[in-house]
Amino acid sequence: MKVVALVGSIRKDSYNVKLAEYVKNKYKEQMEVEILNIREVPFYDQDIENDPPAPVRELREKVAAADAVLWVTPEYNYSIPGVLKNVIDWLSRGDRVMVGKPSFIMGASMGLMGSVRAQEHLRDILFSPGVNSPLLPGNEVYVGIVHEKMDENGDIKDEATVLFLDSVINNFVKWYNQQASILK
Ligand code: FNR
Image (cartoon, rainbow, N blue to C red):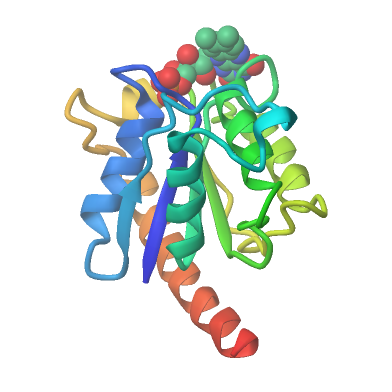
């Protein structure tokens, strides 16, 4: 299974990027994850949406070619960061490459809540008609107090989090295969 990861943080030491990298490396037997670079994606602009710049074309092509999308989001002011919403707005227009594309969500923050409010918003957005992405039910991954659970290399030291992630990825792969057989 080919998965593209869209991460709502573009900073160098992002915990959410590290979480995406952890998933990519640890579960490489179950799925192939590519973390997409969204730094060069310009602000969404309806005037150019049918002939968008290269970073948008590449984003749309990579998402279209993937079997599923992993969203990894921090929480900014109780919602998803603007960089992530911007990417979703681009993906929701033109060929609407998210429609029918299975998604799953996770996120990390230094606070207790582990980006729960951002993930709530993200779920609503994924269900909007222009996106319309089937979402793995349950299996909600809120990595709170991430700075105490992850070392500087991005390795997760907290055993409960590790075991939970193992089960979520397992559930995701099973659910994806069910979805794929229904869609065939
Ligand atoms: C935050 N942060 C934050 N945390 C949280 O739990 N709820 C929130 O509403 C916010 N709001 C917020 C706004 C802005 C503009 C910033 C920069 C930060 C803290 C945030 O979760 C923390 O910086 C994470 O480490 C960001 O994720 P990355 O960049 O480490 O992946």
